[in-house]
Image (cartoon, rainbow, N blue to C red; front, side, top):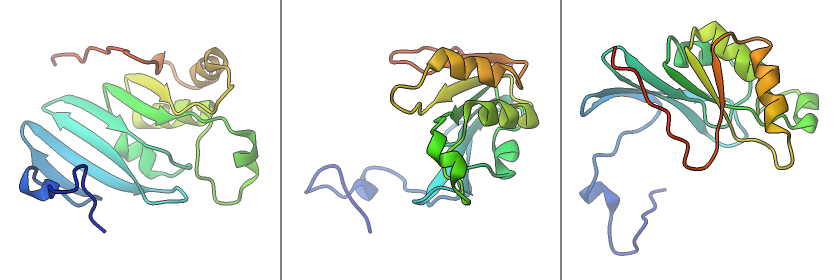
Length: 152
């Protein structure tokens, strides 16, 4: 199913459309999308230009591909929902902050940006839990956050 933002415009006439998962060259970037577990289709995305890399998990459960997606990323944006009921599910669809830190460590990421917090969760506690297993900088997603990327 294809949807548009405007009822009279097919976005394929304005943009190049790339099917995900997959790997593509988009301007100066290598864009890679990998299928990750969630209750609806979810593709984690990695953008890389030269040695600078940014990776984003979207909503996901634990999966070994998380280490590949975030490999050596300058910023790894990871779901840290910390939804207690999720831990009881046999097929997990969300991560905890500790798991976010674990996968960032496995990936060798330089910085971890925690996102997708469950309403009411303590974000500082989530950051502390991520830091317990990740030695790099842990950042909490917030509105208007600006994170400079290095010029390798």
